[in-house]
Image 1 (cartoon, helix red, strand yellow):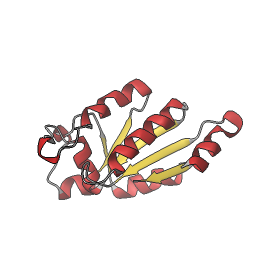
Image 2 (cartoon, one colour):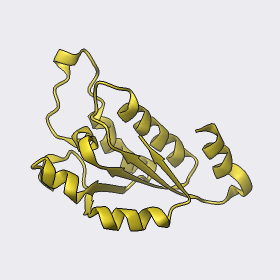
Image 3 (cartoon, rainbow, N blue to C red):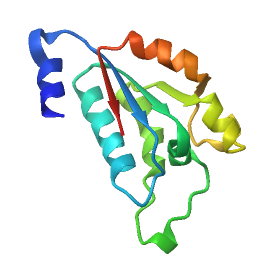
Image 4 (spheres, one colour):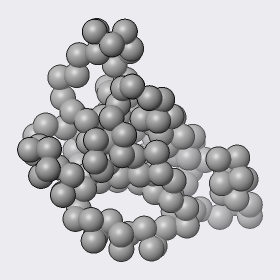
Length: 131
């Protein structure tokens, strides 16, 4: 990660960054770390987008109750992304359909993209980080 951040800072050039998150919000640190890294990228005033696929969709699900896990519910933090100019949030259509979810299930506004559309977007990115 440090190498990617160094690369972003070289020459002051704005980079296009895609953060792809595929893991459920709890049980590992990946989801929370992805969110933290997105906020860091945004703080460096980079062109940031975030993609949620597979079980990563559950990070955005409304009504999360983490009391039984003993972990803090960090999902409301996604609503703060807009304050950091992170407004491009995408959900993979195939993942959404497989989980029986709709756009109404999410705590933030998302744009639904097919897997093919996301692959095409990746080709236009300077850096793609997977979590």
